[in-house]
Image (cartoon, rainbow, N blue to C red; front, side, top):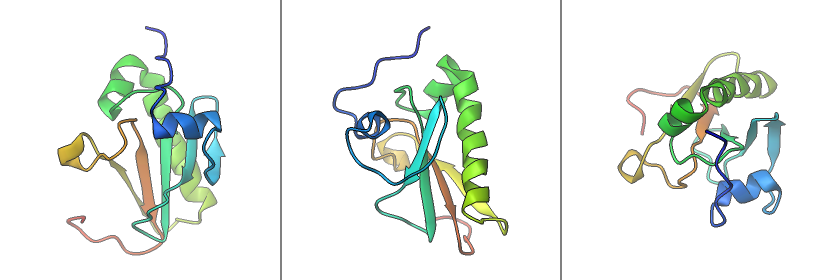
Amino acid sequence: MNAPEPAADCLFCKIVAGDIPAEIVHATDTVVAFRDVNPQAPTHVLVVPRSHYETAADVAHWEPSAAADLVIAAAAVAVKEGLGEGYRLVFNTGPAGGQVVPHAHLHVLGGRALGWPPG
């Protein structure tokens, strides 16, 4: 399958295209990482595939190398952000799972101790 077309009404597709400004902290041919506008930790960066998929499972199914690229980019972000003490990676899936934007995205959270359970 070829990568899907960007969704015309997708906030993250518009950020990837440069149509909506964001503070980009890392970018590759397959992913873009930018600061969350509603941070839940001192460091809160979203890593999104350039291709539009609604969930992480969709990315893994249709473009498995891009799923790996999300995690590789998240690790690069953690290094750039000085999160050597540790960080959390989170995929929210579906409205009941806390996914607000229906474009797969990986949260990189850190900069403070992150308790368990989250939330």
